[in-house]
Length: 194
Image 1 (cartoon, helix red, strand yellow):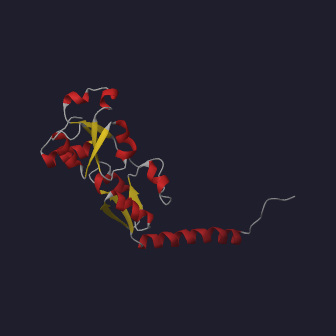
Image 2 (cartoon, one colour; image 1 turned 180 degrees about the horizontal axis):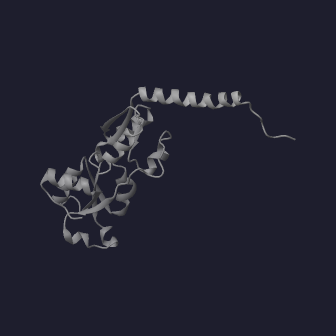
Image 3 (cartoon, helix red, strand yellow; image 1 turned 90 degrees about the vertical axis):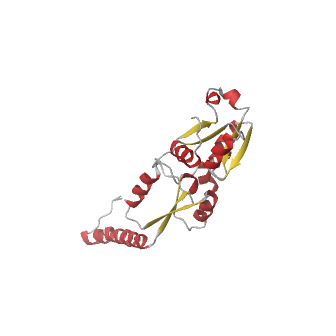
């Protein structure tokens, strides 16, 4: 029994050209369409944003970069208004069927524990768990990963407000990226301990 297939050079050329033509037409239409890539306003100052924008521009797709609040970004991705949403927690991928997590990650963010005093930085995990943390409303990292580690939590609308709340004694800790901490310290004139 012969399970191999013989193709004439002309037939083989037609089979190769058709998918290539389809891919070319698809990429040409994708280049004409403006794809929207969203960075949430909570991480707009991330040290990785420029790196990610450069990688997306290198695709030669027509990409427009926007910044929107966290939940609005998720709704617009789900509605098909945004093509790309950057820095989502893995739980967002399971919550929204249209999200695809890129592997390996293009970039990562490192979060640091921030305390209102130097003495709080030296507490062990057990003592720290009895205190409170201040999170940023809309940043899914807080309810998913940070709030469960503390007795109570408070929320602010920005990291600038978090730093102000820590200085007023409305919480002992928060968690954020180094670049965002530096920017918020400059914006508020207040400092925190990492």
